Length: 134
Image (cartoon, rainbow, N blue to C red; front, side, top):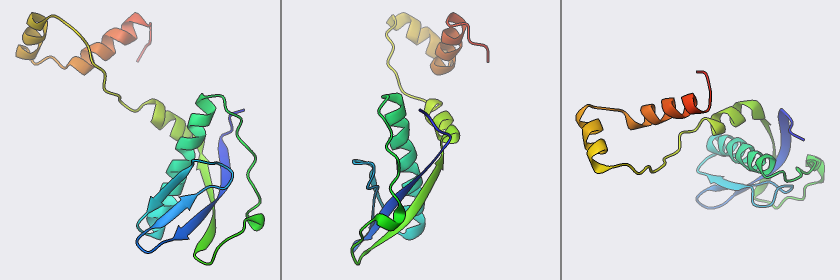
């Protein structure tokens, strides 16, 4: 079930040249940063992307562990990371992606000669074809 807000504990590990970020409850949800400010930002981004992927793949999202039960090494600190998913979902779903189209060479040449914006034309045509307003 999708939730609007998720809060998970992260472990920040201070290495010689950077900070590693892991989430004990979410294997594979990892990142790194150069400093603590970047680490907090990266932790939010990687958590949101990871959870979005799990939601899209219909993978059950585990309950978060209590931060007090996490075992830490000397070079580690815990961090509670919260993400407001509606903002991330919208941003991810509205990200532009590159796609390749095939057309006759003469048509491409003529469109370029007339300064046609291919992306805009294709988006408009697809919205029209799919009956999407806006």
